[in-house]
Length: 261
Image (tube, rainbow, N blue to C red):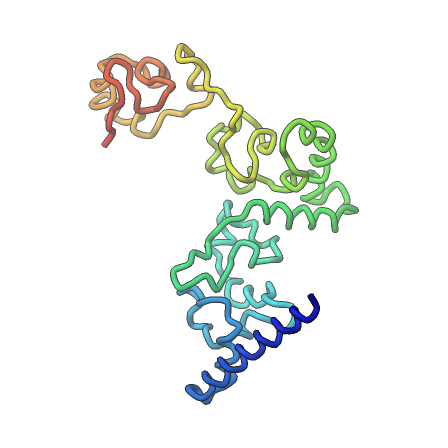
């Protein structure tokens, strides 16, 4: 086994050396040739101008450091000033979500909730001795309350409780604050859907407890199009069940699925 390992190493060394020597003959800039041997892939279009300047992002032995990202992105007020993305100011590891060298057309705006949860949870561990006035103290308290209850009943990790879901998603809360801010009681980091959820029966009349009318229902559009299509010219906006069915919002009673414009 040891002999085989040595043979493989020697073979790889020979192949790389042959490639390097051949490339060096074509390109006298051997430093650039050596860099091309270890680059994992092309940079995205946004960072293409750094193609020949690895040290702008990478540090020797430690890889990509946050401070190098901040040098260019510290003044991005459109990110730090918006409520859904303001959390970037507290994250110390940029490459957890923003992965480079995936090609020119790669998307750098991916979101890895699991990574973010782990990062914030580690921050909580490091600051566990902070006083009760600390903004993260409440998260530690939440984790302590649920570790022996909810986590035992559902597939919820302790790291999930470190995420302040409402802090990013309050402007898109489909529950209109009816369900509180303890989102992880129902949702997980892999999917917002809930396999155990069962919609109320088709005869339910309490739709407005969870559903809000769309903007079009609050305009003349409702009386000119929505009511006539459903053949309910006197249907109140708040009585969703008069026109809609629970199979889908565009499954209209009396006419079936309606292709909305």
